[in-house]
Image (cartoon, rainbow, N blue to C red; front, side, top):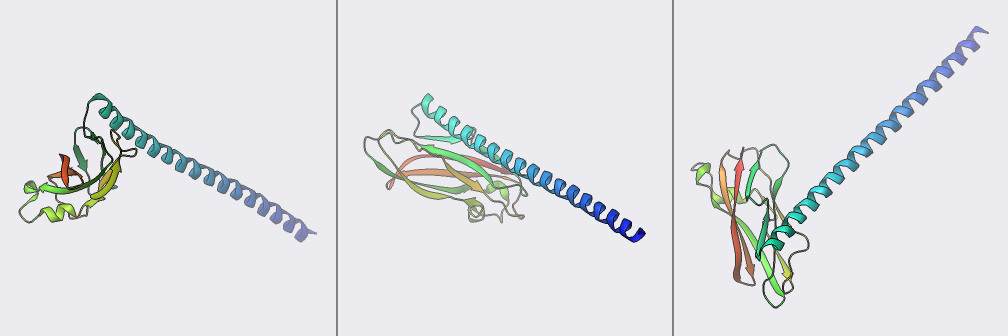
Length: 181
């Protein structure tokens, strides 16, 4: 009789343990899902803010190119996620035009004598591309150029140059100042 009672108590204890563990598992899954939804919404908000800022720059003036951040200064950390800048182009011409862009290091003199412009160019992600725009149109989605730093990146300030071409003709360009910390 005692063995049946002990077996029954053990089965009830096991069932209670399983129910509690399942509750904790479901709660954990729910919380992880909420965290991922929040981060996705934050990224979408940041993307919308960048687009709004670029559209605001174009609406205020007759610029050929708009860059975000507007200060054209970036501060990057070696161990951080890849970061960069966004830009958009407006076709001030009266015909559909093919545009291309290229980003390259222009001045790395503050990074030491052994550091070259080729070394700085290796940090670039999406450093060139092409797109076409109708007359008076600007890019619907801004182009994003990111920097992925290696562990050996020296702490210094470099100058990159963004050059936009309409066909083979230079259309617009500007400097971006990148500081590595």
